[in-house]
Length: 116
Image (cartoon, rainbow, N blue to C red; front, side, top):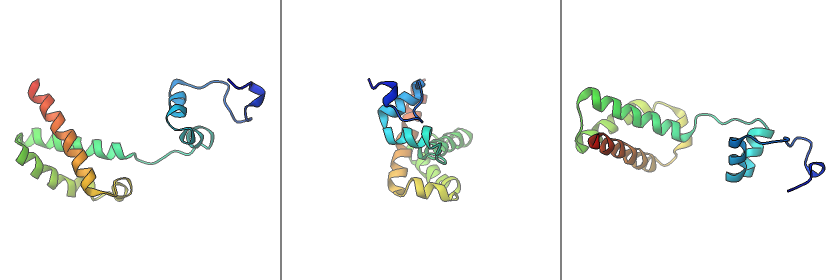
């Protein structure tokens, strides 16, 4: 453990649990977030989560529960919900990866729903 005199002047006296977790995960991210006060825009997981939520919500409203119907619904909503945002392209440059990841979450939610 370094002595307090060895720490830079901007170093905090203590870290919150989330700040300590950030340091453990990625020290540079901690510097950007806490010292430099740089905040990111919408995160990729939020765009993914919003899309998955939209598909699940529309499937309940439209009564679509079979995989083929869900896939068609996801394709339709992908154009309406995702591609209209410029941000998603920057966060998910690989469209196939986005589709695969969202499909994985959609099917996980549907399996959990079926199990009750």
